[in-house]
Image (cartoon, rainbow over all chains, first blue to last red; front, side, top):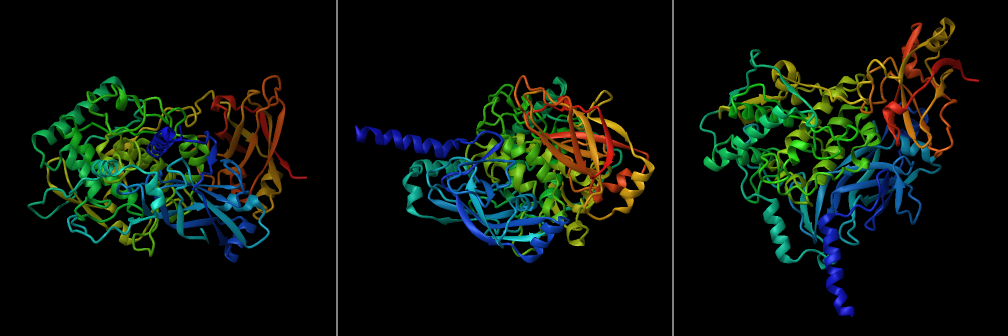
Length: 161
Length: 471
């Protein structure tokens, strides 16, 4: 019985990896099992801009690492409560998403290191009423891919627009 | 690299590393992997070698103005004409594979400029930096002229796929009718069915508002290519990327990767919308401006034109596309963008003399006055996030909020049938100092734009608005 199930499980995993099953409905950003979190300092200049609200806090993500078999669309969150699996896109914890088209095929088992991008984090940081000088930034695949395929980035930091 | 022919070292944009064995354990087998690589990667995407130096691009004012329309608004005749042009383009590849204006050679232009083929040869990287917008404008211009030449119609215009317009986050009919190889606009390596919808998270009003509100040139258009770690802007790494990935079957098939993306005819209408949204962002004014650096303006790329002439064109040549390239965009006919004479989301509001004076004097935060919107209504089962603009009656969901017309935002949550919450609702929106100048005359036009939620634009109504002091 157990042996008979193995091909089915294999087929299911392969199918998920191939088709990129969407697990979150419209209006909600998914936090997939491959989520990755890093603590990011909030520089004084960013804190000042948030207080006056006259310039934007920009989140920079460089060297975005996306495993083969995972669609390169990554949701970005700030101070995400533990165990969260889905966040409404108008929730302050949702910062935005990055979608970077790879130039070539990335086979499963390899990792594409993409340039990265920037997101306006002004609203997210303002609404979270941060009391300390750090924020936890989480990157998560927006769609299901290979199980436990983890995205990450080489550098995550804030600047002022 | 301006000749577009010199090989580069390994792409700075992306490289692939071997990762842990855990991924491989649940991945495709070796055969599938080889198949994916073969599908996704041409070996050599260099264009046929030019026999002469490039000729500088020269605009011709006698060219007819080409009007690019939404792919959802093409007439049958226009759709048939577009299909005839792509049929001729594909036929050229069959009869003359090395003709530089044929279908696969055209697709290879994009491949060459974004990482090249399996042989390690590639042109200048035009993604993930400030080259993204102008290079694609050039590419679409020459592609469009080639299509027109093939059917002897210089008025032929590429359509644009306005996936950000409500209801148009699906493949447009000309590209899926029929959804088979009998249609020159069809691509067999497109992974979506004709009824599949791009998730609102990617191209809905809220996502677009964030993208189109990018306050600086770098944030919207990307960094200079000479930056230490160049990156693309908010449109390139947001909706542009997600629509590519969504349209491709999986990573590595036609629209899903840059090497093969232009093998799908829908690529050109997707990028028509990107090109149009560049115009929309600039039209918002304020800090929304093109780079002024000579490095950007004077940069050149080479393309084969419709006559097969190797042609050099600069960024400066394509900034004013109506004047130099002779095309313009017809805005989508959508109620979200064209309120029309009977719209109830726009009306003039009186501003008293003393209030005007106080508003102009209060050029610092906090706001001293609010715009009181009275009789705001929605159907009982509808929700909305509403942006409020002053003196911008054409405002739509693409309109950014980092400008002097933006007053503020408010939200209304659905309460369900039987709770007619909207009829008497009053909302106060503080007037920020940045918008005070709009209240300098005795009348101000106020427009409400639903940017998110379930409300249709025609659902949003208000009876009147006044300017009141904040208690």
